[in-house]
Image 1 (cartoon, rainbow, N blue to C red):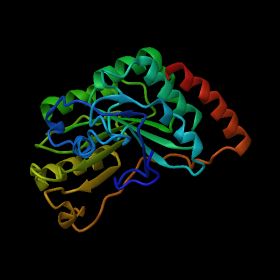
Image 2: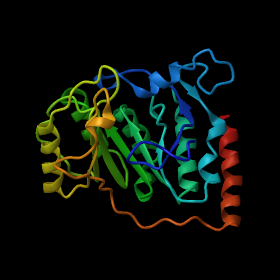
Image 3: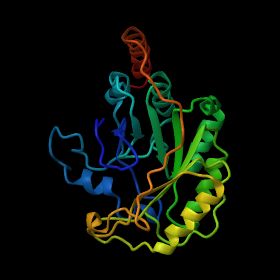
Image 4: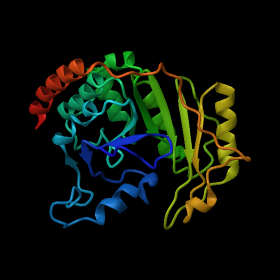
Length: 267
């Protein structure tokens, strides 16, 4: 887990899974793969296996060790609903989120159909937990829009869209049941361009639907130069939730003890 994150819409990252595989155009210039592959073959480094999929059970307990509430991006270096992550391990990750309920968890996937199947059949109670947010990536019409329909059918208290990298005009979106929209352009070498009109269209639709709109970046090869202002201002809107407070140390310790049994089941 990283106690600080440079990702604008989160506070920290937690990676009980590492590595992934490409499944759609949004994956073409994956920042996580680029980072991980730098360390392939470096003995002892967390990414000595590069971006190969790997479960990391010893990271499961991390959220319970943080007293200060944070927004936590779950598996920023992977996808919790990757086909190689067994359902028992997914259940363990979700259970840790339930136990460490003073944090907000932002779970993002491109495998929306698998997420829906697992959550709807095995974890429908997730809809009662407002601190667990489920989201899908939406990079274009062909791959992205069907994910929104799958997300809408997934039990969740808060549902969000990560429209990044935005690769084309998405047209009219169905934002029913969606609680938050993030928009951003691709960054780094080979970054594909994003047009202002595409962003403005999504902002307009969010306004009409009453959905918070977060503009992450314009992107580009040198994203800092492009910045993240849209029409002279930044958009950092978030879903409204009650202020979270950590439980007393004694209760946190009991939950940590309970979580250790969860880890032993999947280690």
